[in-house]
Image (cartoon, rainbow, N blue to C red; front, side, top):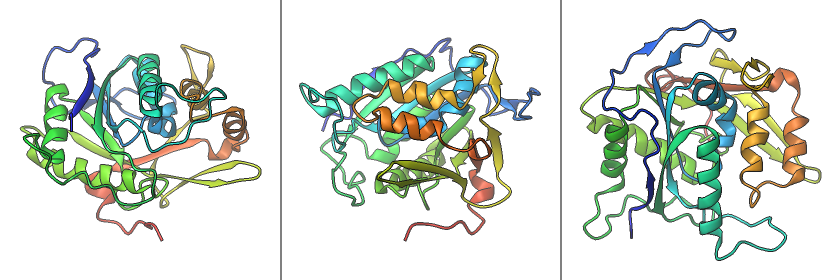
Length: 275
């Protein structure tokens, strides 16, 4: 297996290691602004869940950002009327390239298999001379040297997708191999879906989490940070059609938020997992 499909080092200002500190900057949301961020996910389009926060940090505040995506999403469906050519993996890879450019983030797109079945991925099995997945992820983190790593909570993965669960677990193992200690935050937004018609709900995994209010108006766009989700979805047309965009717009204002927490703190708490 070719471990690296694309390593688009579009890292603006990629000038080498930084400290793991975040610089406290007061904003209407009262959130500290990290000096650099790496979002680590399983699939192209996973960043839609955290798009309001990425829009604030990466686009609005020009934080040095990168996306590390473990698969090309070949297990996903295709919503394009004319189909996905030459194949779904190529289409989704290109879409992720467009999304990463929108956020001004460097993209590292790997080629671990994305199964169409809802089963735990077999990413930890060694393949030839390639490094194991934990070591590989650790090397990408080390190379970009973010002050903040953001990924899924391995207990629920936001949507309970097995790939999300495994991604979170791999990242937690990978940071143990680093030469420095970045802040590691876990995404604690729980997203649920109902169909016919499509309804998307957003809620915190547990009470008392750090919350970014996505109703906040971004100065660069003069629109609410919540609109960053739609902007991201429009860059993934093979996965999101008008019904998805409409469902996002129908989320009540009170529920428009991104929830996250430091891994060290949240992992000591009881957080509902997946059934």
